[in-house]
Length: 432
Image (cartoon, rainbow, N blue to C red; front, side, top):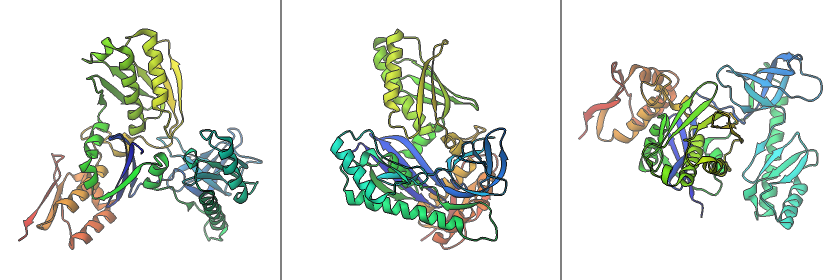
């Protein structure tokens, strides 16, 4: 039985999927109103600029720019539209990265319609099983296209594999048909949307048990809300009393390991290094830390502890969905690694960049709507008292979510701004 579990929360304006590993929050995936996700979406994008000197092409992705640095044949011209897939969201001043070689992912396999070659995950080592899966692909996927069978498809039914391959081929056909449709405007269009939070969570933890709840009740039951508050804090506690101090800067992420009063650090340096590696790996996944990451490990245990930390961290990050490279120790004694950046960090999505409160106004507003749905039973004519930024978010980009709550209440939900406090309160007349 898998030690992982997926908790899905559906609430007005937001769907969240929490992946628990042995009871601990390991990752959180979020779909949020007003923040359309383009990562892994296949789109039709007009070329805005073709730079031969840079070997790069810039494209219009609607609300953001796209950047293509690899293409076959002559570079496309300005105004030409390309079918591309977004491989990394825009980050700060950097444009979103795209590719002309999309990957259509399913539960059992990935289809690469523009790149030939049938393959089976290396984790499937039995020759007979690899041959069986390759034969199943060959019966369905043309030689001009490619496919990769996932590791967890081992021993799957051949018919199921072929059925999914056919579905992915049909999906690619629909993408091409939409791209070729005559339109008055040849502007940016989404041809195949990004996978939702549950699909992404199942891909990360395919064997996990899935439980679904509404309006935050399931998350509260499993203390997910408290875990998210802790994930906004730059300090993460280690089981023995030590602390990780995590600072996200524009150029890099710094993780300082403070042994504090943890006796394990001096009595069992190797055990302490293993404990640090497990928690660092979890924090990297949970907080979506990416780019250059530097870890300052206490100078205890000598080279043996450093080697164990490196090896243990490799194991802790082995099933990370993003590519991680551990480069080794710098001359200054820091462990250096890089993790592919494809989307904003958890702090950038949920947090308050000014540090006034743990969460930004959008995050607070969506939680306020969940509270209204949970806590207004028996309250006639409820009102929501909230800080001005929360009120502005609810009356602006989150208005459809507020409308859904008002519909469920059977009447309007007045919003009263409260300046000078970050508290959110629900008031109203007590019903009979």
